[in-house]
Amino acid sequence: MRTSSIAAIIVAIIVVLGVVQVVRPVAPTTVATAIPSSPKISGTTPPMPWPRGVQADAEVTGIGAWPEQGPSSPIPIGSLAKMMTADLVLKAHPLTVGQNGPNLTVTPQDAAIYQQDSSSHQSVMYVKSGEKLSEFLLLEGLLVPSGNNIATMLGNWIGGNTAHFAQEMNATAKSLGLHHTYYHGPVGLDPATVSTAADQMRLATIMMQNPIFREISAMPQLSVPGQTPLDYNYNNLIGHHGVIGVKTGSTTQSGGCVVLAKNFRVGTHTYTAYSSVIGVNHVNQIQAALNDAYPLLNAAGKAIGSHTVISQGETVGAIKVPWQSSIPLVTAKSAKFIGWAGLHYSLHLTTHVPKGNTLAAGTVVGSLTAKLGTQTVTVPVKTAANLNPPSIPYRLTR
Image (cartoon, rainbow, N blue to C red):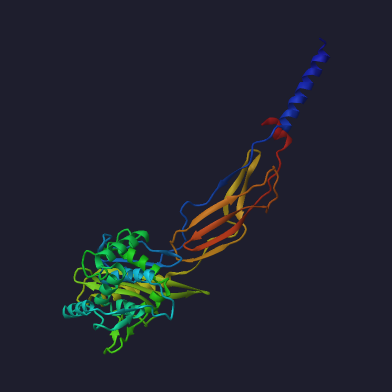
């Protein structure tokens, strides 16, 4: 074969190989994320006036909670148990605002329990045999003067007897995620009724979603027909300083226990802050617990503010191709949350890079979603540089 023919064949082979190399598909684009795994609101976490040596917790609904402070084991909670008693009553016989519900006739047994509880200096609401009391009035007697006799009366009404009612209380506690709570009965006097500050605060936030419970828990006093003087709420902060609930409790074994609630306004939105303190040992147990819980409540409410969690132009990922430098992916907008410095939130990057090897800078190729409590914000994510097609030299030499 002539040399010229061989050369022609070689050239032809080179051309064919070159064409094949040029048209052979290039490696697909890939996306790498660049967001923190556990982001938190920047800044210095505001100090909280945690009481020493007792269980305490605080949260702002829809935003988040602080870690529970102090001892973490379940301990007696006294009349905080009556929040769950009220829950089961309202589930069995729901009320709407303005309704009084069915009437219950006070039995001789109910009257005897009142006399017995009163003689042993328990918290009670006066009842007499034969009188008819509405469900709403009985709930007032349960929650405002914290009537132990009313708790027993309601427990017998709903559960048939207090033992069966306690079983229902514990089943409900489990369903609500109160994993450190156990109820011995509807009253809370028995030290076998135990819980934690975090569990009781969680229950309070659930109960305050019920408008009837919310209405009654905000009552500083009530007047029972035919009875003087007035029955006052053991929570003397109700009706003062913006406090709108929730419940107190105390026994020799439990010490002072309290869950408080107060509304705070940030911009155009209103948020409810809660604080809970249990196990306060003091001569005046309830007042000491209130003295611990109220500063905590105020601090929780004042901690909340508007914070930027996504900044415009923030790099959150990159498109990677082998023929040029990575193309940064940046946020197209900024976004804010209501919260406090140090509070953790979540970030999730979603991308949908279109097929092909060319993208202009500024092309929206996904979104970044941030979540905190009930708050969710989503901003577009765009390319910060051009994605150019692979060059001929790259295709030939790859």
